[in-house]
Image 1: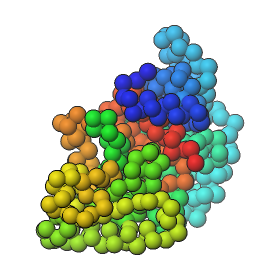
Image 2: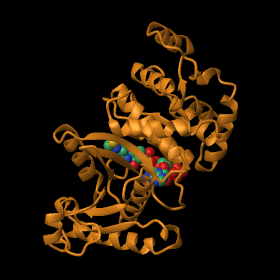
Image 3: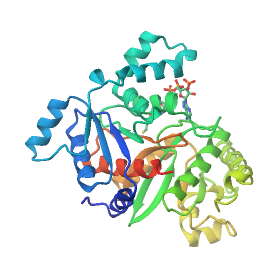
Image 4: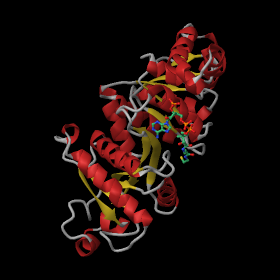
Length: 334
Ligand SMILES: CC(C)(COP(=O)(O)OP(=O)(O)OC[C@H]1O[C@@H](n2cnc3c(N)ncnc32)[C@H](O)[C@@H]1OP(=O)(O)O)[C@@H](O)C(=O)NCCC(=O)NCCS
């Protein structure tokens, strides 16, 4: 049992539909501990990449079984050739040579991502010892965006007083264009639905409905217009998504402020999905809420990809990794 009520509720759901999740950082005791927890709960089938003897020794030392956990050393895997060929074929037009493909397939983040592409795993969680860019790049190159031309982005699940919110994008797209901002808002709305959160989406700014002016405000307005236009298409017609902006954070979240600053807005005062105008704003905001505001923060979780690959913070605890596995399993459930 882990502390977060919210993550426990996801783990309970995962038990009904157990997913195979690759953990490429088998050298890390936090990862091994998380794999033990989800395996014991029967909430996921972990596949750990790493040295079998060292991993088994760690489990034995703790009195834990490795039953239910698959351990693969990529260098010795009978699938290595298949994955190398897969990588080469996917990336040869980008200039990847067979020799480079052979080297890259041995990189554990690439190997794990190739397992998903080959259908041997449902999702991956990495990043306890790797940068966001190193974790995310193989997914962008191999798994690719689910919607053609649509930018993949990331979200955090932020939990305040047991209420979950989606914050996006706090992890990937540094300075989104108008269209990327619209893609982020639409994908975050679908993410909210996937996690049982109301898709009430606020596109945040330092302005509410024209209260302030500037290029940054105009960008949010243009992103909003593109997102609202897209909502009219068949792809979104049954989803009941509400997107509004530009809104300041207080107008988005507080009904009293909303009544004054944005009367008539379908979202103001009841937003559950907050879209930030830049990675700078989103990343700083989530960390402040986590460190000073007492919120639980899970992410960055990628959205908009064909299969889930998710990143961890290098300062994470084993419980955070359990949370990431739980979230990844939900995303892997179509
Ligand atoms: C995610 C990130 C690593 C991608 O940058 P990159 O590795 O330089 O990516 P590239 O521009 O070389 O693109 C690699 C591939 O990914 C694709 N790609 C990059 N960003 C993408 C996106 N947002 N959505 C979909 N595809 C994307 C590119 O089209 C390219 O595909 P191709 O090689 O098949 O043509 C980069 O955006 C980044 O560093 N973001 C900030 C991450 C970060 O530091 N966050 C800190 C807070 S957690």
